[in-house]
Structures are given as structure tokens and as C-alpha cells.
Amino acid sequence: MSDDDDWVGTPPEGRHSRDRAKPEHWASQWQGRAISGGVILLLLLVVVLILLLG
Image 1 (cartoon, rainbow, N blue to C red):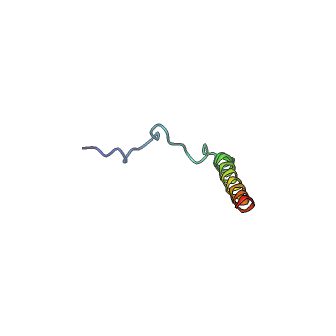
Image 2 (tube, one colour):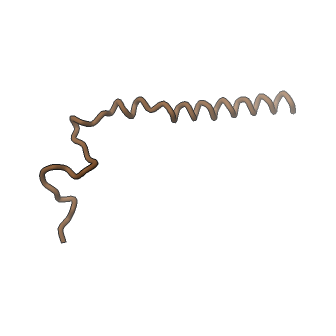
Image 3 (cartoon, rainbow, N blue to C red):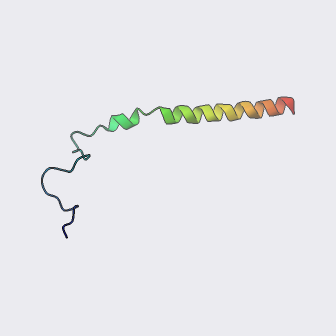
């Protein structure tokens, strides 16, 4: 049996060399922070409403 991890030469599809990688792509992912901020804001609103109406 041959081991697929022991390849030599061109990397398999889906792998990129260090010079083609773009770490700034992951730094620009704002959706997770936006969702987290929205959830925190919603929780604060719920707490304020409970304190005012309770």
C-alpha cells in the first residue's frame, strides 16, 4: 500500500505554498464580531427591560 502523505513534487489540490497564503484574509473576517456584538446588545436590552418592567 502506498501512503498518500508521502508525496513529492507538486502539492495535492487545495494546498497552497507560504508565498500564496493570505493571512490578512482571516484578519478581515468581521461577521463573527458583528454577531457577538449584536447578541451582547440584545442581552443588555433584555436586562434593561426586565429591570424597568419588573
